[in-house]
Amino acid sequence: MSFEALGLHASIVKAATDAGYTTPTPVQEQAIPAGIAGRDLLVSSQTGSGKTAAFMLPALHKLAIAEQAPVAPRGAPGERPRFKAAQPKMLVLTPTRELALQVTSATEKYGTQIRRIRAVSILGGMPYPKQMQLLAKNPEILVATPGRLIDHMESGKIDFSQLEILVLDEADRMLDMGFIDDIEKIIAATPDGRQTMLFSATLDGMVGNMARRITKDPMVIQITSSSSKHENIVQRVHFVDDLSHKNRLLDHLLRDETLDQAVVFTATKRDADTIADRLNIAGFSAAALHGDMHQGARNRTLDGLRRGSVKVLVATDVAARGIDVPTITHVFNYDLPKFPEDYVHRIGRTGRAGRNGLAISLVNHAEGMNVKRIERFTKQLIPVNVIEGFEPKRTASAPRSAARPGSWKPGDNRTGAKPGQRTFSKPGAAPRREGAPSGGGYKGSNPRSADGARRTYGDR
Ligand code: AMP
Image 1 (cartoon, rainbow, N blue to C red):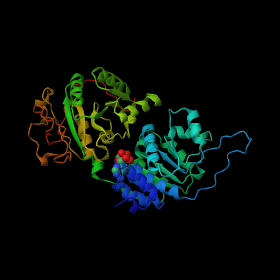
Image 2 (image 1 turned 180 degrees about the vertical axis):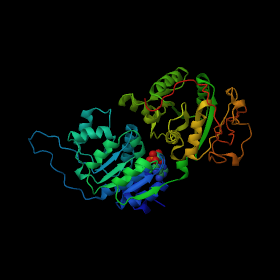
Image 3 (image 1 turned 30 degrees about the horizontal axis):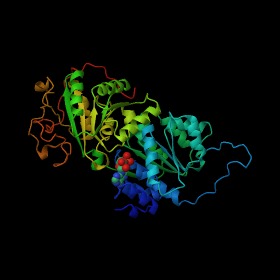
Image 4 (image 1 turned 60 degrees about the horizontal axis):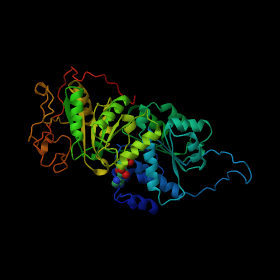
């Protein structure tokens, strides 16, 4: 199947080809023709599945071939220019600023051949005068986080009466973050005849209820492809006795020569700062990313990550959501996430665009139940690994056997990693137990926490 065969305009096919896309991903194969036909869509697909192009390519196609409405004059000559509300044709709502910026830059990439379509981001943290300038240009596409958009809507800077296409990206996440009222308010300001495309990791529960309310006869697309199971990502658990053990092990793993760039996830913003500082002192080029940072600092950090000057990003869930940097080879869960869904989003920061990745969770002995919950959610067992010199003291009595060198057989591989795929072991290195998954998921837990540390969760 080619992009042309999906019915896209030649200029958009060219932009996709220039972006290096040769064949549509499964979600694109289904969503693009339906999107072009004007259907409402409910899509359950993971990040990394190519979902941005799945909604943006048909939208650009429709906007590009639509008859251009005559441009309303913006004030007579000599008259003092008055601000006129922007009247976008398309709105994409995203949970985070980072994802919004990513969608905007993907839109620019896909629209390089179509001059007259502009996309701008409207985000919290961006100075108002700058946003007024962007809105004054009356862009066709707005990509926004709900809160800031509401501010502009209520002060009459945006008029949605001409809106044709509404996209809710990572809708489940927006609801988790408490944006339901804002989203309802925004939707109420848009025309009934709009096309609505909703993307979400799940279409159950609250998201499903909202999805049914805001769409008309939607086409439901459920993608359970290998990428949504992260089959190209090798997952491991390493047990640690305490924080000092965890830090020493993290430093060791960060020195892996197969590591290009890494994201280390922490439970709190404070931990993200502390660990980034500690890693910098230890000689890694580390930077923190969390919601307390000013937008400028966040953008600089993300630029550094994309350019490669930041090797280790230490981040909270909310801040790192949606980061798409193909050179991220490793993800570390310094703290386990509160929700299993977040685990899936976290590890999806590696293994981007068809590459392989390694996701390592550093877990204290009391967190076994959390590992089990993740395994139940992903329907995958996560092998436990031990590295020589970093053995947890309590492994011997643990109910789950640690990895034994040479014990791996193709059939043992419960993570879905394929034989012959990158193994992340150092060539010529002394025998390491790392590459030898135990082949069993977590089977038990010990309630006593050796870590002893307080753990609170969320982007706090
Ligand atoms: P997304 O799920 O939208 O975050 O996209 C994940 C990654 O896949 C991004 O790096 C996209 O540039 C890339 N991508 C999207 N569609 C395709 C395609 N058809 N072929 C190759 N890469 C793609």
